[in-house]
Amino acid sequence: MRTVKVPLADRSYPIRIGSGLLAGLGKYCEHLGLGGRCAVISDYTVGKRYRKPALASLKAAGFKPIFISQSAGEQAKTLKNVQFCYNQLAKHRLERGSFVVALGGGVVGDLAGFVAATYLRGIDFVQVPTTLLAQVDSSVGGKVGVNLTAGKNLVGAFHQPKLVLCDLDVLHTLPSREFRAGIAEVIKYGIIYDAKLFARLERDLPKILAYDLITLTSVIARCCQIKAEVVGKDERETGLRAILNFGHTIGHGLEAISSYGKYLHGEAISIGQVAAAKISEQNTGLPAKDSARMTSLFEQAGLPTHIKLTALQSKQLFNAMRLDKKVSGGKVKFVLAKRIGQVVSGQIVEPSVIRKSLKQ
Ligand SMILES: NC(=O)c1ccc[n+]([C@@H]2O[C@H](COP(=O)([O-])OP(=O)(O)OC[C@H]3O[C@@H](n4cnc5c(N)ncnc54)[C@H](O)[C@@H]3O)[C@@H](O)[C@H]2O)c1
Ligand SMILES: [Zn+2]
Image: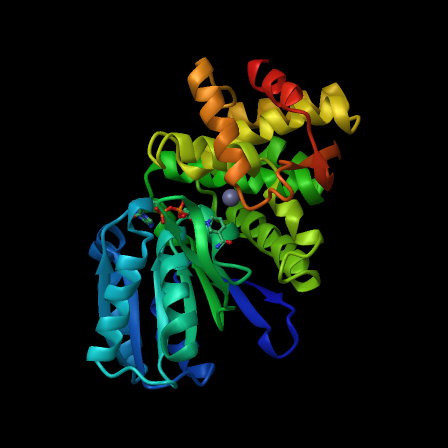
């Protein structure tokens, strides 16, 4: 097992990464001194497989868990479902000292985290991420929230978990398309922060795709370490944290125009990162050979790297990008790469350059 610490003074917390950790959920919560009553929030798909071991582990450690289930998928990240959770917590008399366990992918983590951030003005919570994307990204850093019809993640809070438990065994039941989508975030860390990680991915991708435990543990740990370091320096995204959005301006736009359906988040940001690389070649001097290495790595991971848009879709994409949170004063801002391992944020890009990047 590897442990990575998120350094946030009195709100610091460990991320534990390894095999067989779900069985120890109760013990870890006990060691943290968490309160007696708790609620495990999950979705139907994850609940079917992992509800039993999670509840058994909590009960064995003396907790009295209730279980709350949501439908699976992005459509579940709504205020209506948040309200459903509040009502369950109130009905079962969860108190200020109680805690929430988010058992699932990023959707469950964001939703359950938002419930924990706001119920009784905030109670403790633990993340048990069950997708690769959630393990390397969404479970770490304390951003929680839900979608509005007007856009993704428009309502939310910063609420750090007390613990993140990444059990690699659960990844075996994750559909391979979802697993590959998570790799898009893994590659992102190499591009934005760590050229060595990127080179390692070029070498070890086959091992990752074969779920090699040692490789996966150390790669996931490295990604968590990078996110922890970035969040430790800039928890509220006033500067540095924005680099985590590499590929996300176009990515979020693509997700929005396909009504959060056609592309998985990781697939959308794969296309977004390749487009951002093309823009970077023109605007921040990214060497063409670095850009080609990026495209090739996404391709090797079986991720989409290009999209053909009709004129109408292209217009919709620009409208969606203008609605994105990274927009200020009507200008769409990008994170761009100078080379693999180094990016700059807050870059204003002309619409014509964005269009060209999507056509290549
Ligand atoms: N808070 C943040 O910092 C942050 C960062 C990145 C992404 N996100 C959010 O994360 C969400 C995407 O998360 P995701 O990609 O994990 O999607 P997800 O939570 O929808 O999970 C994907 C699918 O896999 C299923 N699943 C999950 N774990 C499984 C397992 N072990 N075995 C079998 N099936 C399993 C789920 O039921 C779901 O159908 C988006 O809403 C995005 O906005 C948040
Ligand atoms: Zn992302």
